[in-house]
Image (cartoon, rainbow, N blue to C red):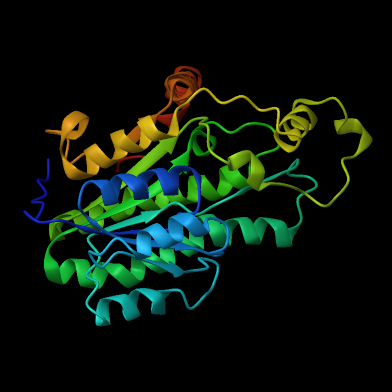
Length: 295
């Protein structure tokens, strides 16, 4: 297994979507532990007190406006690096979910979801990698979801985008490990974030045949604000921080590339294991008997 040598100094963290939820929780940990924070969000007025706190911290930490959907967001990275902000840890956290059956989600809605959850992170990753390679160190953290492993009805757009992020991250981890760069995918279950507040429902009215379906129930729960998560975001981000730093629960696990968090993730991971195992059980012989005939 590849080993990653962390510099013996405070790290510079760039976190997207820092106004609330996981982003805010992780950002506060980063500051509290003496690291330099570059906090970003699309709207700085969402959490003005925290913006002021970050900017006044005194160790070079700052809050900057960043829209990950902007196709020129790679220039944001270049500007930081040129000004002396050498990014050690990039955390792709910004996101939202749109709800609706796949039949009714529009091309525009699906592309917007992919832009925020897949192309946005990819643009930042591609921009920061050359700098991390030169320094022979870096950590790319992609915040993902159980939806990408085992999606729920009405979350096809979100699940598809997260699955794309996961697939890319698996390949990226192999490509950049020789340069001392680590990729960590954090697969999250349900937590007490403001995720419900960021719920968007597809604009196409639900066809009558979907009324009362699981998809319809999911939409009603998420849009009504009655959804009850079971995870503590601060505990989750403490675990993530320690796994990145290699302390606490992360000690000795500095080379791991997947971090599942949340009690519901245990069930969902096992569901995927059973899904794949069942496919081999049913079609294993078929799978192994479609080879070219040896001459």
